[in-house]
Length: 386
Image 1: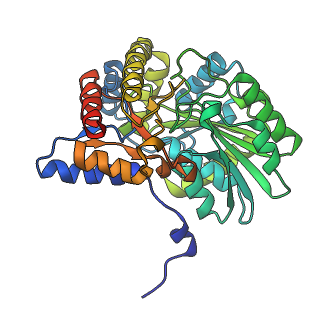
Image 2: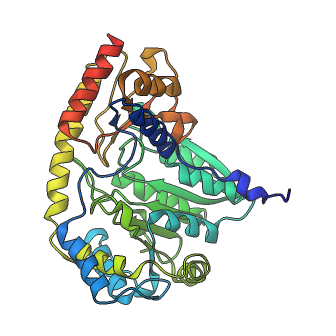
Image 3: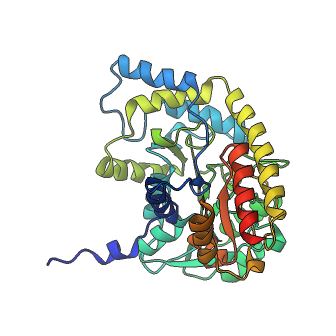
């Protein structure tokens, strides 16, 4: 039999979808499952955005468009960055992608060579490590410590930089811990990158989802013109996960190369989705305000609930919609505990190790769920451990 490439064996998937499949199999057998494993808002896309997408289809906006995105959406992103990040990128820096994941993949593909070293958080979103492995580079994991509220320490980055370091990937607000880097930490990381001539990819998909704090971006330092890349999208705060729409702000030289990557891989991002994205950015934003009020209530409910369970200890996250409780006092591994909750309580969660070795001793719950389901999950888990 013909052999697949070596690179194909180095790329890997996400445990969230594997756990979801297990949970759905149990549901088919009649088990009632409460889903806390998938990172997806528990509401529907705003009606004005849906109607903009439908209108675009009816207006026959269903054909090929420029690979880097339609000018109208790129201009809307340009205005969005000026409003939310405090600088106005050149239009040539803005690239539209079918979701944020291609932004991660293609930006890393344009930066990283085999043998390079890539610094990222541990635990972290699995795609960073997967793409690093696929590219034949070495992942350098920076531990996120509970005693530091799971924030990446710039001093830990300094200690791990050498002449092979090519890229630092940061994610704030962060998946899976919900941590949010401070302005000083963000600026210090950006300074480290500049001093050592290293790229930064800043995954800011949860940038509008913070509590009691403010989101900052390392791209403020060079306005994404030299060595920083900003990634954001529409999936989370516009509840558009299935629409597959994201954007990148990059140095112009990289944007030019990304255009060829996109032509070769996808031709272009779906045209009518992009018109819906324009409405999302320029239309009424009260959807986000209302969503975050509900998430704040849900966050406090699940944190208090988890802290009432014997063997669980849970910090209150500053961003996103995840909690990352410490379950070490249960004397179970993360994987064993996650399986135990799924099979015995019908509560689907992710083991912390799904996000890296630093996740051992923790679980990730997505609290994008109803208050009723949160309360029911807490009751089921409490019964197991009491």
